[in-house]
Length: 464
Image 1 (cartoon, rainbow, N blue to C red):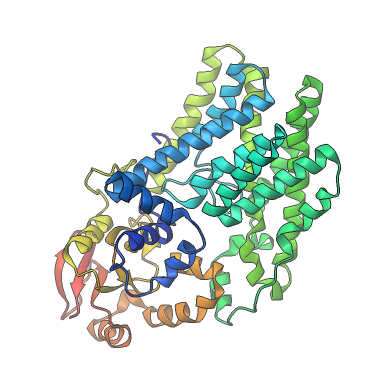
Image 2 (cartoon, helix red, strand yellow; image 1 turned 90 degrees about the horizontal axis):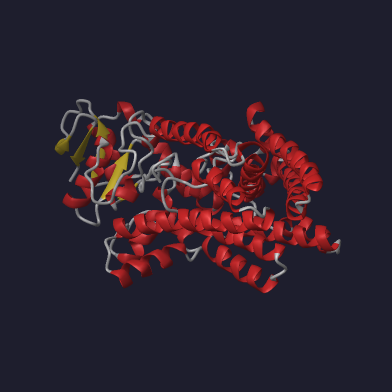
């Protein structure tokens, strides 16, 4: 956590945290809750966190912080177990764990994923179960693997599909059964209703869904791991590391299957909505297993028992990752402790909203407020715990996964176009159309607005 930082209300926390808050306090979010409840209803994650809050009597902020620490610990524990199946010497095993630990916020090619996000979410909590399922398959403990996959599926259904595919492939590559062919087809025999025409507007904002739209350097994140895994497989065969050989060869086949699926879903326009399956997010498991293996190979062949070599590798890596995170969240404390005051003026405004406005209040903000310099992608709903009109950043992410909401999302985003030039009559139009009670605007003069709170960055203004 000291390396990656902690930002509980940032980025996709805008989708996941309100789901927990709504369970704990059903009076919250009387308007537009569908933009986060669509995700919340497809996973046991918010129920699990909410239950832990009720049982522990902790504040939600504290409970989420504890769960984030637990998620990091469990992922590293799972990586330790995987490393033990690959290498015999303890120091070599720990090298794989250490490499994952310092690279938790390593971007995974063009998938918009990190190994571990800086905030609690279902993927953070399901990842360890996916890795433990792989370990169980290596041990031929298939019942235990099934338990791990069921837990992963309950927390993050999509990521569990990738873990299941890899587990099936491991069995197939080892046993050479027809399971191989079934696993290749598994996630793609699904049918979907055609999305609304407005869904195309959402699809354009999520280019990472479509492999053909990836930049050349993102393609390196696809090809590079296959080259590395091929080299590791040959090296492992010489060193007599049978599980490393099996893992590397299986991961190459696994990645080729999903690259093929991603290309299939990216090219024809009629598959536009199917691309939300995001087959390239299968790379998550490739990267984690590759890093565990890479750490072991480095320790075995390069680091050995030389302390200075370990320091030369891990200290600059850890420092570099820490600096990169500070650059991503320059206006926030590196670790936003649950008991500390917010440093970011946007978060300060959102916290004022939470403490000083009715729970039924409806807000409007710049639909692209999360991309404003200095805002640091802090989610309004996640922090303020108030309803708001649909935004063009995170709500579009929810719509990308649930196309039925596309028309409603587009109908709310369009009237907010030109937000930076809005005057009182424009805000009144939103009030008449959607019952907006309050607006959050950047520091600028708008005649007629009553603004009971302001700081150097933003104003919170009342319409009624």
